[in-house]
Structures are given as C-alpha cells and as structure tokens.
Length: 331
Image 1: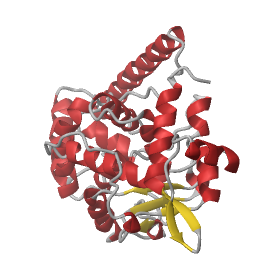
Image 2: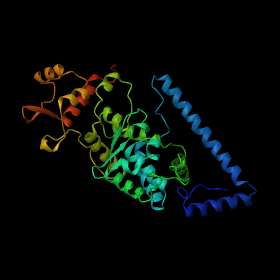
Image 3: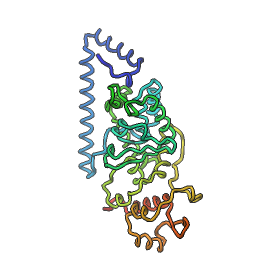
Image 4: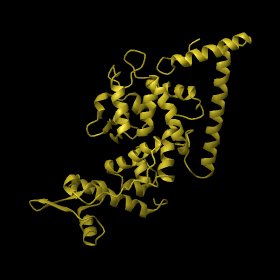
C-alpha cells in the first residue's frame, strides 16, 4: 500500500506506519480497508461540522463562505514548532504551508507561485491577476521568515514553479498540505482555515482595523462604504501588521505594532500625486480641496515647481479613519 509522496512522508514516518500496518495484519485486519474507514469517518465529521457552521451563520444572518475549519489563533504558537520539524525533515509541503500561514494567501496562489514573482530585495510577492479570486494583482509584504522560506524553496524550484510536484511540469499537488496536516494530527482543520486564524488574531489580539485584515487576505468586503475606500493596497501599513503576525507565530513576545505612519523623514516615504489620491479615496478634485480647506484631509507637501503631493501613509490613514467612522452597518 502507498503511504504518499516523499515530499509529505519522511522515512521515520514510513517506518512507523509500516510497523502499525504489520500489527493490523497480525490482528487479521486489512490496513487498506482500515485506512478507508478512518477517512470516511474524518470526511463525515468535517462535513457535519461544515453544515452546522453554515446553518448557524445562516440563522445569524452572516455569510458562511469563509468559515473553513480553522486552528484557533491562540494555538498557532504550538503548531509552528511542529511544522518546523517537518521542514527540517525535508518536507516541501511544510515549507509551502508555513509560507501560506505567513502570507495568508489562498492554496492556488501559492501552489502555482513562480520564482520571478518574488522581489526579495524589497520583500514583496506580486501575485498576478489570473491567480487572484478578485481578478486583480495582489502585492504581499514578506516578513524576514517568509523571505527565508522563499529562498529555501528556490533551491528546489523547477518547471517554472516555486513548489514543483512529483509529476513532470506540474506544481505540488493541492492535496499535499492537507495530507501534511493529517499526518501531523490536525485532520480537523483545513489549509484555507489559516486565513480565518489570521483574521481572528488581527481583530481579537492585534486589534487592527478590519480594512487592513481585508487587504491582507485580498478579501472583497460586502460593506459598500468600506469598499469605496479600499482603492489603495496599504502595503507598508500591512507590512507592519504581517511582521507582528510573524513574531506572534514564532512565539516572540511583542506589543501591538503601531500602524500610525511616522511623520519624520517624509522624503523617504512614497509620495502620490492628486490623480492617484482621487482614485484611492473616491473623491473628485474639488471635494478633496474642500476637505483640505476644512482641515478634514491630510495636508500635501511641496515637491518643487509649484507642485504638491501627498504622503501615501497619510492618505491610507485617512482611509482607515473614514472606514471606521462609517460603522460596521454602513451600506
């Protein structure tokens, strides 16, 4: 009987499983049938949990689309060391799952990731629009640990994929990470569920604005007022949040990271002109200047020749404040 590819099953695990199967045979139990029965039980349990969650969400008026079985955020610190053990054993799916957790991306986004998408100098991963659910390119800020994982994966990249599979020309199987979780004793959760783990952490522990968490997971919110102010991607503000998430996952004690942009050294910060400001905030030129005159909009800086521009972080901060002021029930 097959135990799975070498990318997900170590030699030590194979020996342990072989001994278990021999014991079953000695008890006149077919190991293959025993495994099928165990999987049927897990499938039924997961399906039941999903149906219960959907019904509860429907009864409370909330959408159930993102309620995948997830690891509680308080347990992530216990999970990561176990995952690192698998990485040290040479499991590519463990490296991929660790990167999923630190970037909160979707399975398809990481499976088909290509080395050229990663700008490790500026610590940015740009996912092309064709792999994004919303059909738009998505920039992902990379923490130091994520950069190290990408560098490690690049050593075995082939077929144009960061995580190649055993089949020539194909990426790693979409079941690889699920099989890894199952082998680690976490069959009750899903890979997609780590996005929910992050969302819960950001709201309950980090106390970050919901608009930032939505941006991090490239999620299209149903709140029309909030969506109107989400034209910018808030990359640098998300970077601080994701660095904090990485520290928490690693068990490093850290206070909540301030997302208020520094006011010193404006020359080192990105400046955006009026046209981009208008696109981000969804306001016309006259409205922007009317708000500015009334002290309700960030002040621009002079960039020479009578021209002005705005600090990107100032505009992002204004968007967050505007969204929070709109309230959760705004439409």
